[in-house]
Amino acid sequence: MLYIILVGFVAGILARFLSPGPNNPSGFILTTALGIVGAFVATWIGQAIGHYGPNQGAGFITATIGALLVLFIWNRLVARGVISDPGNR
Image 1 (cartoon, rainbow, N blue to C red):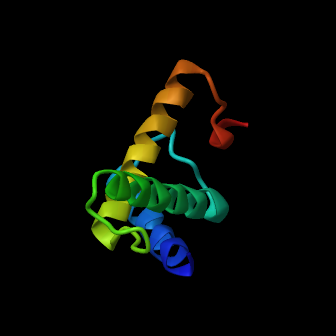
Image 2 (image 1 turned 120 degrees about the vertical axis):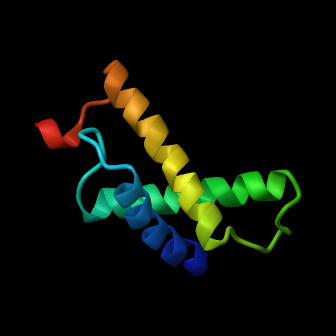
């Protein structure tokens, strides 16, 4: 669990760096949450397709890909107005 959180934090920072834009979640807490959710998504998908065992977590690259996926979904939700952009308050 701690491993997923640490890898997720670094993956969130890298995902924000790779995908800059006006709709990115800003701030330390949202970046950390983005990466952690991305790591959990990558772990869940990896375990569902049999790439990881029940006690294995996502690696750094797949966690970054998961964070990019979460960031893409975030950007689509902001663009459609489903959620508000915390940077434009």
